[in-house]
View 1 (tube, helix red, strand yellow):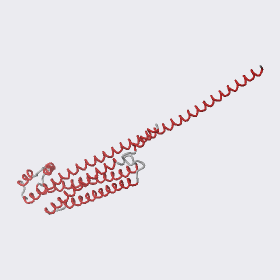
View 2 (tube, rainbow, N blue to C red):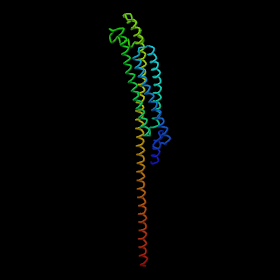
View 3 (cartoon, helix red, strand yellow):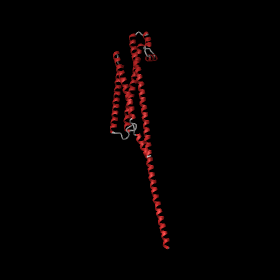
View 4 (tube, one colour):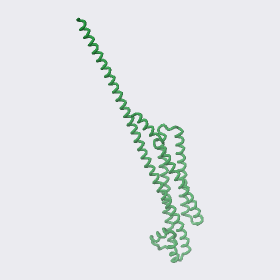
Length: 281
């Protein structure tokens, strides 16, 4: 039983450093934690730059400058997507190495929560500026159709090309120059909104993936706790069985000496009796 408990304990310490992780192992682990923290900082800096470019684009009146801003946003969004995917896999990998080590689990949980907070911050930025882009496009459409209903404005904003609705507006408007400018504005904003919706969808999925990692980690922790309890029970059972065995051994030795004593006593009595009998003759 004790041997089985020892084997269970040894198995529970595999793949995670265990309670006796070497200094070199911990040094490598904290190096990986620092690498993740640096990547999270890069992710957060990119989000801040994306927010700044969104704000600049929203207030830009020069078409060429606005197009340059959008190219910068597209490049940053692509880079941030790569950083986030790398972070997800790094954290997932590190979790697999820290399941049976409470010190490591605390560190991994901390960077994971920080990353999830950063994802939510990015979601907030994209959602906020998505609404502002829509409001800007609505204002542009009302330049062409001041009397347009909310439904007509919505259709114009959601139309993929915008050409059909704006063509009708151009025919009915005496402000054709402004109408053409508004058409270009709405078309550009529509493309930007589509990109932002894709980014938001990816962020939602990324956040779900990280939540699943949290759930899996919780399950792993429960499994480790269960293993530790089982090992503890096995050890306790082994100790108890050993105690009982020692008790039985002591009782057996005591009975043995009692039996020997009885035999010696019987022999003495027989000797005395024989002595008395032969003495009388």
